[in-house]
Length: 438
Image (cartoon, rainbow, N blue to C red):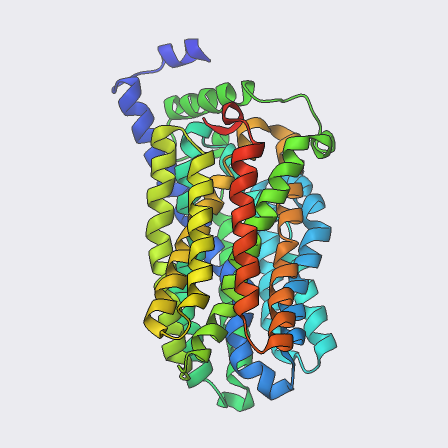
């Protein structure tokens, strides 16, 4: 490979060639993955806005909502590992397209929900349909970027989470307020339909535009392909390539990472699913206004994700860049209760919490990909994501149950803060720096 590179024409020094090549790859891949992730997160959490009308229309309790919001993750958990292994075998292009088209159809079909049982079943099916999407994206990035560049790329891709909040909050509020009664459908029914359709469109675009391998990228020169293949091969050579997907399940570090991710996701979905209700409880009733305020923490989170990701790549340090934002997330959650009587301070506190949680999560994913490769990466990433995402089931149901018992989300926020502190402790005490700081 090195001989081929020397024989190829080199108009630029390697440093310039490398910079230009990665810039080209980033511009070709990241925007597409980013938009896919925006619509996936929107479909996953728009139930938090639908709740503002849905509970009254269908006479659901807070516990019914919490269970329905969370049961998505049971389907996700059951089918996550098989889905990611299929993606590893058949390629990202076909499988990610299949996932997106399927979940778009299921999401739009949420308009037919009438009873708690139907709510639970549809949310379960949505989780089954989406299983494998996120870990598949993380695995796909390892095919193009070595570990030293992956933190920043993962952070850019995962800014889809806060951007979904920035765009989705006002959009969801507008749909609830403006589409209510159109063609005999409630606002929350239109919400599911209109926010499900983009997933189907993006699935078709993935099928047309995504390339499975470096060798398939017609938009790269031969020299650029060789450079990328060499970088990725060198990165893979440093990992444990000789363990199968199922041997990864016996790796203690994989299970530790699953526990850390569980704690981080407790915070993420506690905020995501309940923030519209918390904002409304401050006396803000108009759905559009709720949506606009909802966008503020996510706008700040977008900036913090990018800055923290760049800092981690520049310093080649991962653990403290995960732990410190996690602690900021915990402080923000506690402060949102302490300052609950002041809407301005409460929103500022939720903004701090969101910035901390969102900054920690993309950098977390640079940890498993730093020591797993091939089938082991496919299985290990899927296992970590599926077990961690069980928190997506526990968190909204726990907060809903506590709210039914206490008529307040305060205790729930304290519990979520405890999980964020636990994540910080586990990442520092449990993971050796040599394993993940690359």
